[in-house]
Length: 601
Image 1 (cartoon, rainbow, N blue to C red):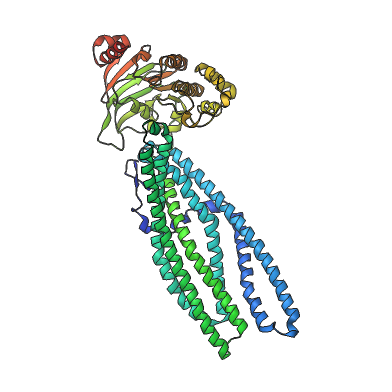
Image 2 (image 1 turned 60 degrees about the vertical axis):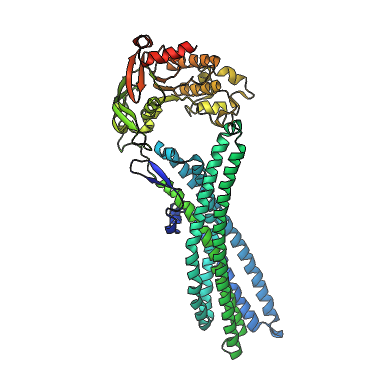
């Protein structure tokens, strides 16, 4: 999946067939800034690599001298010294190879850790339109599967590639020094070996990218199922879900099998051509020995160098496929890093006036979500909220109530018109500065897989334990927290699965109290609660709304009767405005909604 912008900051995903044909190893070059952070480790790894390769290249020289000069009674001491040197060479080779492996592998781990951190940080800064168009599971796959692929390449494949490059070029150079005539045969075979590598390399890259994309699709679907496992089991859809996921996994397997097949063919062709050329050169060399043009020892030296060079080239054919897959993974990650958030701070942001009071104004605001530009959600909306005022938003579903909150938090910008906060036009301010002065209590409270204390502290990361506990008291949450096994240190499970709806809402309210923001946004905070929980939550909300500007979305009209003013919205417009008493007496939309609710009771 690749991400692109459609011009409005709305990012779309495209499948694996879109741009894989042009994928090369170029995306891996973008890792150089990460590698450059650790110049000392890179230098040490390269030094160890050079030492290991140099000691390897010394071995054929010792073999030649031993064959040419060592097999006689007079050369017994010479043979002993040669073998002693070989033991020393083996020790240097072992130590330098182990050091190279350690340095390169840990370097790969460090680079991937930095890359994961950068991608996650960048994701948290992207605008809502990007997440509207993306699947959470696929993004998680980018952070896990793709970075793991890069770690394997940088940590192991690059190390193997560098070692074999040195062996190939070093062996080739020493072949020329040993026998220029035989070297011509070997060098003439290189184009025959390289051309198949190039031809199959593109297929390997395409297949590898397809495998990664299908795996991301399967991971995304699994993430959705696991997140909503209770709904899945409640509707007894385990069999259908298993069948669908199995099909996705099978598709991923077939794609991976295709990639492996392409790499296998590539490796087989390369190895056959390499070693066939070695056999041919060995035959020519044997003829030269018989003709007295070279010694047996020199031929042995040449053959060893040829084997080193051929082995290095053969290993490179395998590493090439792994690097191509890592290149695809890197491309996808850097596509995310290359995305620019639609909502961002201007170069010189306007500061909010001090003290911040929480006044909000909408002036002729028109808005449609980027994914549905022709479906207007707000149509010329104008209203003002004074500091300290309690304003309620009422209306049928789809009237635009939650969209108003999205615009206040500047998750999106209006198509036209302006939204101001304490007189400052939101695009002129830093979005983070605006959001720091807003506390949100959503309808579906976000509770994380952490302790109760950590969930409340989410509202103010610097808060002390005492401040957290005071916020819980004010939110009427301290009582049920005290009954939990470890109190504030109790883990609540993913999405707060071990808590009731009322408990989750009170934790969300405690979080908002802890934030001490001048503007409070309440999005149907009591709509899904039973009567007892609603009473406790409503008491907590009364504490929370005191001495701050509050905008409340509510379907239960009984919860907003104490608000200073009520706006009734329908199809993105204000159709009524007033207090509960005046609107109930007007006989309009609000009166009809109130009559339905109160008569049902």
